[in-house]
Image 1 (cartoon, rainbow, N blue to C red):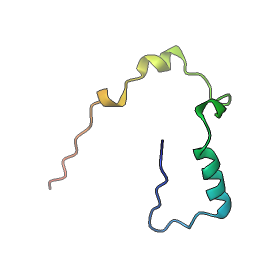
Image 2 (image 1 turned 45 degrees about the vertical axis):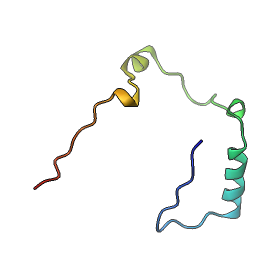
Image 3 (image 1 turned 90 degrees about the vertical axis):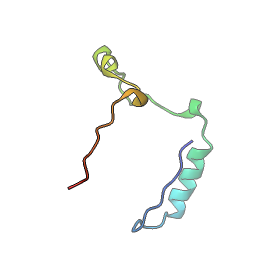
Length: 63
């Protein structure tokens, strides 16, 4: 599962946000409603590559 990251400068979570996060943490995958997410087309799926197979772009940070 994911985790919550708190960064410097972020306002503290409200009681309502904490309550909602607790509800989501306890939700099973079967309870998630994906009906508002459009299906991927065959063209989109053909372009898909798993993240581990993508080539990372190296950056030259030396001046």
